[in-house]
Image 1 (cartoon, one colour):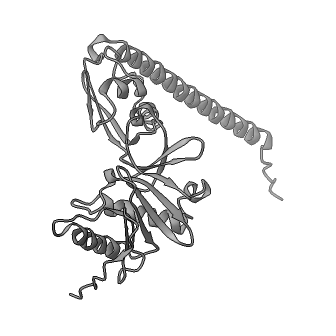
Image 2 (cartoon, helix red, strand yellow):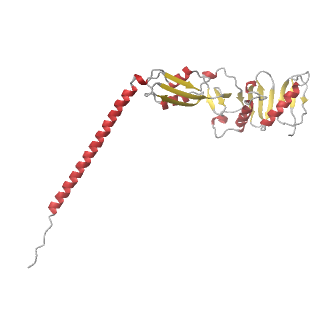
Length: 284
């Protein structure tokens, strides 16, 4: 007698699978709900803690220390950073304060930090102006070769005026002209201790892209033609020439000195006579 084949209960199996999927979805929804609730609770807790701390008088600024300012006063630095005593130091956005400080033309770098419970430290580095340009509007050149705008603190600063350059010669830091680079070399030599041409003695530096540099002294009518290149050697030669002019009882006051050729320096004194020093460069 043939055995009957057992028929599988497909309806029962499919109902079990559907129930399993429903339970999995319910568990997923429940977990999502718990995570969302936890995030919301933590966020609410963070807001409550933040509001409590940033509104607490315990963290109000009682001391703001400013370092590195020379031309800028402490009050000017605080105004630029929009800081004042009594502010809650935890509510202050230090990054924004730093950005505001760096927006001042004279401030090259700035660092701002807080020290709990009531102190703000500000350290700045100011630019050192070494020359100025006049393109209908005054710009300054700092010791690093960067151009920056005018500010009231530089109103009485006496630095050489640079002429002969176009604004395009100074705007691109990557493509500075030969004339601009020559000016920077001469300015660096002028700022050295014991320089024969100290920065304070120079009234104007004129740049000719073909003929080089000519210096006009601040407190006299003397002009000094340096030409192109070899400025260290020319400064050394100029020192020898000026010593030569001052030797003896009679001092020769030059109207112009041409040191473009260091082996033949031509001096035109204030009187009409033209002289040549004829001093040969010494070989060491």
